[in-house]
Image (tube, rainbow, N blue to C red; front, top):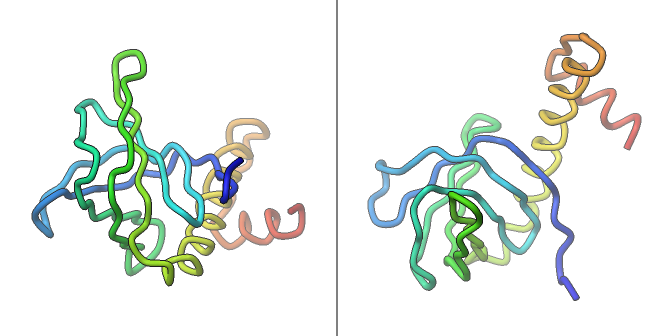
Length: 129
């Protein structure tokens, strides 16, 4: 049984294994209070410390974590990261909501052809959910 609910997401994110300003851009697969999962073209080693940056707000959300699993799926890898700091939980909840709002904004554009500002998308999303 899962300790945390996963929230689907397709928001861009960056990660860095060893150096603070060099990393790679990938898409977040899902995020929860305990960690996240993302897809990459290269296998990453379990146990490595990783810095995650999610540029959904200014300043970008940053968190440290540990790679807890990496598995090949078709032609890419899915990487599971556990957050290093329990105090990250509140910030993650904020990022989860921002990710959900961005996702809602894109869905409305695709499904209804309406282009919503971030504030309008947030207001509609909050009213619905």
